[in-house]
Image 1 (cartoon, rainbow, N blue to C red):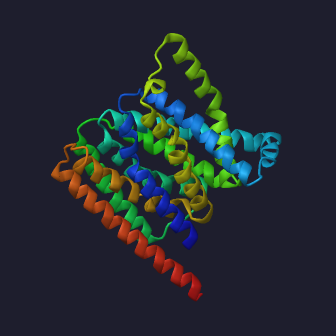
Image 2 (image 1 turned 120 degrees about the horizontal axis):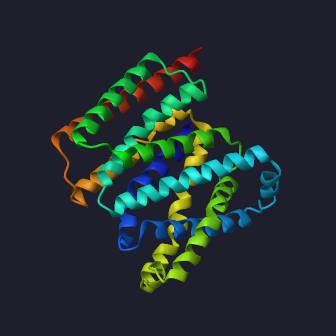
Length: 292
């Protein structure tokens, strides 16, 4: 549990600061950034798996239809999440991306109860209720249907559920997920070259090197997340996730200068109250379990 918590905190801090990285490429279309993100993630993970001498495990995945289908689903889900996130950040919707990842822990709890038969305690349900009220306040204040936030929450929530159900090493699993969407990414490169609309390949050398690093930037937090998901309950993992959108919200206000209403700040305070209640109840439950 402690090891899982450390991995989760590292992953969500990395994801929280990612808008700073993607803003470097705000003149590159989101789809093209995604294609590079997939290709260079595959290359990075391929090198990592080769160094670990685990290429043989891919044969086991190819021989298991159920595992192959699960990894295909998780690969498509995370690719969709990446595309929506990149587009939102580079089109001035960082606040809404933050809202999406505030929604995600609530969805995680719902998925955990329905599919994994997890049973939150009364104190944890109280925290969930407080957080739910906060998200409702934020959504109403936002003034329009937050499709970006909903899409991000659903895609990443289902991805987290898929990772809980896949008994696979983090490195090999992530390599398999990127391999699923690699043909689409390469096909998109060919299409862009054919119609003469490539943007990334015309970037200055220093910026193109930064784009190459998108493989590392993408893979590292996912590796930490996969290790956390294997060691923590889905509902608890979801609440730790509030670290990420909180960092995004702070960046949207102080770095990207997006407007934030007083109501949003109230919702923000309620969500952190819920997080404290949930954490305190989880610690109490752990102590009671050890005592018995």
